[in-house]
Length: 157
Image 1 (cartoon, one colour):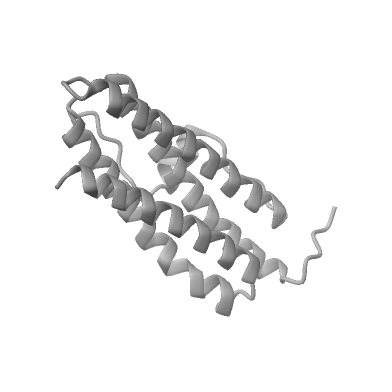
Image 2 (cartoon, one colour; image 1 turned 90 degrees about the vertical axis):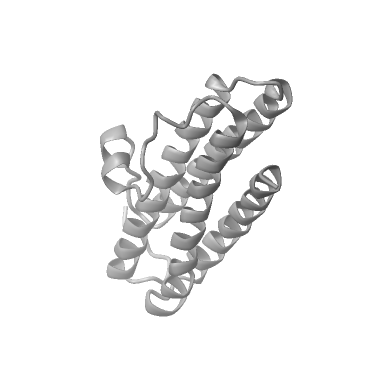
């Protein structure tokens, strides 16, 4: 069925492609946060293990929200690990160790990378592609990532 939401097909396609990159980033971050949760060791294990659990649940929710936004624009969300690895700005990392501070540094870098990517899309979506809804949507995601980055940064002081 044709998607008629006041945004041209061309603009919806460009926005959906940018969101596919964001979805890939969110999914890779989700996976890296699971890795941190599963492999954490050290004297602060219990509290950080619980915190990482909270983070991976938030990451899963964000990924779902991004995928649903892509569908709202009339496109299909990428849904394979191969596609995610081709689209993501993040890198997989098996060498982050198992102590909380190293794992937190890796997650912080990824949140900051996503923040920079999102910040670059807000005006583009609004102005160039006439999609205020997606611009507002990613602004909300930006704020969530900024809050998480702040909290991760606070662990490193």
